[in-house]
Length: 151
Image (cartoon, rainbow, N blue to C red):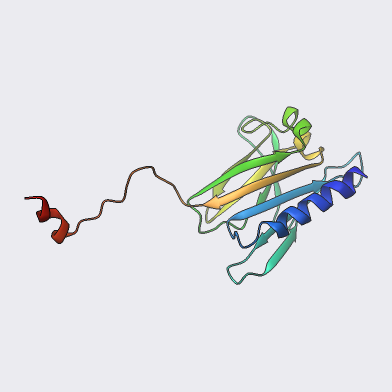
């Protein structure tokens, strides 16, 4: 039941979000309690095509602190910044802690979502945004017509 609900939530959320090409839905469902969850990455292409990738391109690597981490590409090659904007269900936040047992890192030309084994054993869903660096500074527009008008 829990798996079905999580799966339905991810698909319905994905389709209800419309044409946001920067959004990634990373859904991890448990098929066997002894094994890590199996994950799907849902997103839209620039051509408005819905894409689902199943653990394609994922690899395991030991971090500098000795942790085994599973890295999966997010297909955000042109993005300047990538953020996890939502994590569900709430209970996973005790196991999947940003920066400790999961996170995002840029490697060469793509961004990767990583999880430790502890986090990979938990059914969860992550909403990830691929985007550009936002600034609160106004655009610096130089227009000679406007510059001299106040004198």
